[in-house]
Image 1: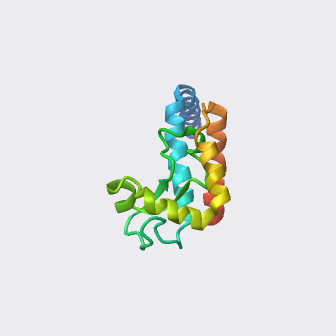
Image 2: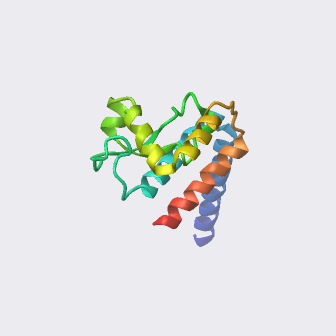
Image 3: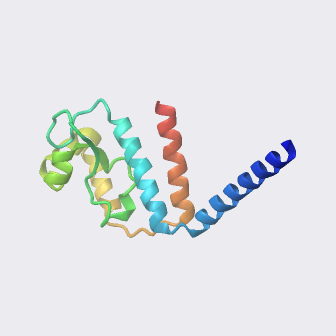
Amino acid sequence: MCVDAWVQEATIKNWQKKKKAMQQDLETVQDLVKAAQMVFNKYIRERDKDELCISCKQKPKKENAGHFYNANNHWNVRFDEDNVHLQCEACNTYLSGNLLNYQIGIEKRIGAEKLIELQGRAHLEKRWTVEEIKEIIKKYKELVRDMK
């Protein structure tokens, strides 16, 4: 009976490994970007947890990781820590980023020189490779784990 249980357990473990490998093989760049964005945003919220909303200077009721340069249109700075800061749900979602106040806040936080550099990076074209995205996921998972 013990051998049967051991064989069954080994079979299940082998199937789970094979299934995970097959799922990873089927992951698209978009799937990976979505996963990377989730872990990156988690890192930003953790990094800025003691900060106020970068736009309205209020304690957020619901914390968002707000992008100064939109993540969908500026892929080069999508995962750029200078471009993303803690923002309240109201500013990020309902005020479309509250960008005029965000610009004031980001300049105070990172400085005018870094903001100009960010602007230059934001307008460069970028196509992420699968390897780059996997590295981003790994990096920010480790950073979040180390912060806790």
